[in-house]
Structure formats: C-alpha cells, structure tokens
Image 1 (cartoon, helix red, strand yellow):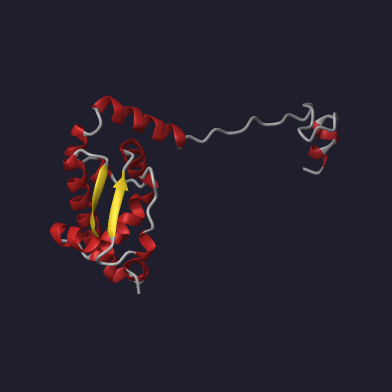
Image 2 (cartoon, rainbow, N blue to C red):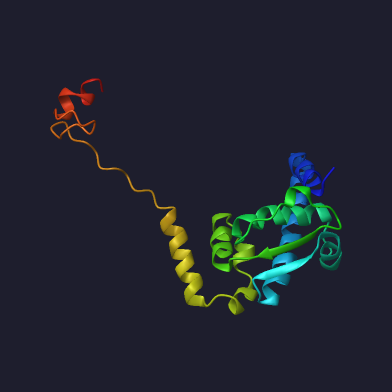
Length: 166
C-alpha cells in the first residue's frame, strides 16, 4: 500500500471524537513544513519523503497528504499517489498561486506566517488577497424584463416566448 493510500485511510476514517486531534496534528505538521519551505526562500524544494518527514517530525503519510494539498500550487504537478518512504520529490512552487490557494482554503495560520515577508512583498500579498476576494464575488445576472427580447434568439418578446411558461 502506498503512503498516499495510508493518508486517504487516515483522513477518511476520522470520527467526531478523533477529528480534532487529527486536525491539530495535521495543521501543526503543515505549519512546520511551510515554515521550512518559506525559510529556504527558493521556489524549488526537494528531498526524500522519509528523510524530510523525519527531519521535520512529521508522519510520512501526513507529509504525502501535504504534497496532495500543495500540488495545485506547483508549476509542474507531481505524482504523489505512488510515493514511498524512499521516493524523491521536487516541488517547483508558484508562491503567488500558493498564497492565493491558502486563502481559498481559509488557512490563515499558513498565509499569516511571518516567513511570507521574505517571499512576497506586503503589496503583492495585498494584491493577491484582493484578487482572491474578487474571485469569490457573486454577480447576479441581469434580470430579463417581460418586454425584453427573448434570450433564446426567437425575436419574440420574452413574455410571448420562454417567459410564457414561467
């Protein structure tokens, strides 16, 4: 069984009683990993799953769960599903996309890390935050009036066409 399957089993088999403890462990591990990544100040982060997990004090399957989470923020996605303890990984991280995705995940404990100060300027982080918020803004479509032309393209008024059934 792969470490990814171990991760899926661990995540999916949580109960109401175990979830908080699991989440505390995962978010603590994730914070340590991101602090390590951001402190290197390089978008390339490499190593072996087992060695990096041991170095950071993280379970290997949780480290693979982290790889699953960061995969959308990489310039080149990796195949984390078949990783084992001796598997090598190379993360080519798009820091702007990562910061955006952390906001989307509501992970303020991650996008609020002080290590970001050396990676993205305060202005750039504010710009990304603004773009994130704008992406979540819902714009209502213009309401069709009874006497407007029908959007189906028939040339009839809405009230005499598709609006008749409403």
